[in-house]
Amino acid sequence: MYRMDWTDDRLQERFDSIDRRFDEVDRRFEQVDRQFEQVDQRFDRVDESFRELRSAMGQMNQRFDALEHTLVHGVLALTGAIVAGFAAMIVLIATQL
Image (tube, rainbow, N blue to C red; front, side, top):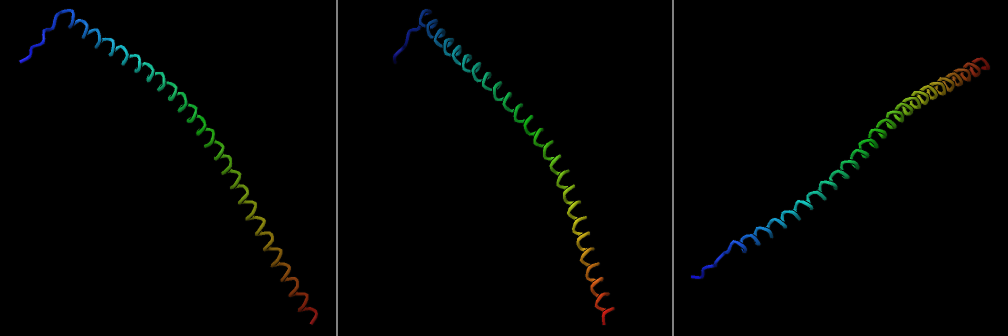
């Protein structure tokens, strides 16, 4: 059976190599952390945009409600005018006979 002799120098080289790899992993995680900070800032801007949109939609809903009331009053007024016109025409025709 083959037996490998590990000297202190060789072990130290291996540990140094492992340390370098972990240092690289740490650097990559720092980059990921910076990218997540940028993503958080973007989400903050998106949240603010949604708040502004909700506010604008509330104002728009109020305007549509006002328009609906105006249309209902207009339709009622026109219906009343048509009914009054028919009534006047019936009275006019009845008095002419």
